[in-house]
Length: 138
Image (cartoon, rainbow, N blue to C red):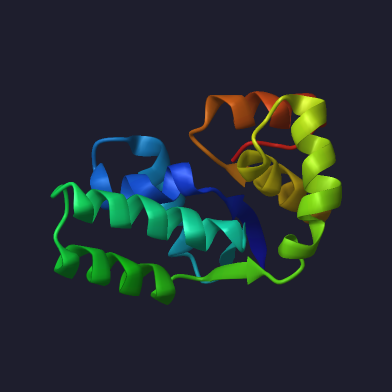
């Protein structure tokens, strides 16, 4: 089995920009492979929910579309890392300070470093920090 860390920036393109950006589409296609799995910190669920809730509030997406998207995410081979929450005030914080990241972005970097996996992201600050920290980009 192979895997990678998936961040919310790539994930949310599947809902709003599917078919218009080749990188997140390729990441989603990769998740369709039988031996592939994505890993996410618990924060990922909050980020996905927050983006969808705001989009619903602003009339960008209807509740039925949101529910269908959430069901589709649940069907994908995405594993929420159970240890990520316990690392926020230690490892995540240290990485945020060291790389000038938000703690949100540092959570993905911490998980990728700890698991030794590449990261799928569209966030330029996170991508730069990954290169500095020696974490491969997918």
